[in-house]
Length: 234
Image (cartoon, rainbow, N blue to C red; front, side, top):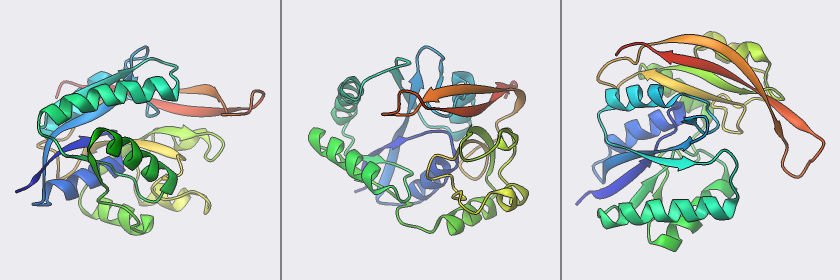
């Protein structure tokens, strides 16, 4: 019998490819997607994507969506408490596994598995330890299309925000930037591909820079560049 699974959905390329593989894995049945939203901005945390764009995306996928609403600033203790409460509801629905699109960040995987074990869930990582160059090639070959919506300004310049991730984008990436942005260099919004019933239509708004303090460094900041996407009636 297939495991009832929750999919942690960010809206980006790694999520999309991981969801593609999970939907095609007979050992798992995806019951719903879960996305964390910044409740103050009403946008996907770190990606900066509007809730309306997320809803259009999920509608095109055709799976239920559960939103974890988070305040703009939150401690790890409060985050863990909110997540445990959310997970309890899924466990009551018979869900046994939580799926992630992580690729090679060992500490993050260990953290997720530890927190899942505390509430009695198992983790599933369909992309784990795969070569990121092969992953991005598979992603494009499958017909996925994605827009770069968030860029770490300490790793890439502003011009990368708002570009479609294609051959040209990949050839322009500095050699020290992972092609999947697995180190947080950039985040994306997927708008077309084999997991969608139809493409998600949008128009590009403005690019906005926001400064964030580096953890543990009170006097240093980093600028992130966000490409706003505006929904078109889908």
